[in-house]
Length: 167
Length: 280
View 1: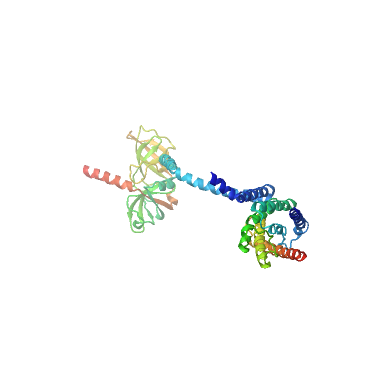
View 2: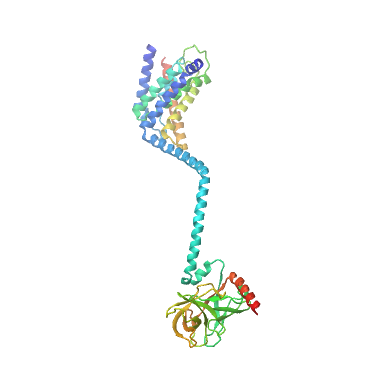
């Protein structure tokens, strides 16, 4: 129960952070961090895919509602939640019945960041693909994806380190 | 069935995934004008291509009926050409040279008058085209207004023409519209007036009637303009009229002429000559 409330707290906190602050950032006109997927990345390992996707969908939908981009973030986040278990298995092998949250504590920092990098890149790629919705300016789109992924990752590392040191 | 349900149950996260993504994309295309527009227009491109391919396939299958239609159209056009050719034959007099060229069998060679005379009894015209240009004796020569004469002798580059204004010249003509035959001759005098002989008395002629070639002379195609009747008197023999014809061709200023080479007339001439030889 405490875990659930904790999760809700993270959900709302990241959502507010995203809407109120991060969406206003438009670094050099190309980079916007989408830190809210940190929530999806750090959900418990034991959680089923369906649960993951539902959480992710509603988080994405909430972001969409607040930024008037119906469907874009929901689609991207749901996709990340869908492929998360596979990516996790790719980088990190543990016994299935063990319960852990993906993070620096459970994994090594290098493993967590490579996992986070792949997921973030996928998410941002989908967000900008759906946002541009054309391949007429592939260079600009790649720049958007790369810069935003970099920014999101930096913020994610900061948050992860803060959280780790607090505990 | 059971295994199917098992399969679906095992992979139910796929269904959930597709459902959620479906909802997301539905929202995307419903509430975002930009994506909606692009989606619609690209869909139009796809359907456009599809219809194009369909059209191509369909046109292949309708080749047979298309062929039939084209054949029918061809037939109609052939018929039309035939009718128009006949029409051209009937209005030949109006545009002499153009019509002469239009008839495929007839070759027309343009030539320029090199020397000319009108004041003798036997006048001759020399033109600057000869055998090298495909000209032979006994070909008709016309000007832009009417007939001029007949070729007489050819060198390689020059040809001597016997015009109407020569006592040897005798060209078969008829009076339109009564279609009475006669021979056009000239006995000196005014270069603008020739004489139409042997027109029977009973033939209805009047001043202003048009004289055209008959086509029986083998030099000219039928219906080329010659002149108009300026006056006529009954002859003393009471059989024929003496008809004065004002020639269309102005011999005093004649410059450009056309030599008519109708291959068909050679055949006609051969036949007639054979007949006359037999009589001898």
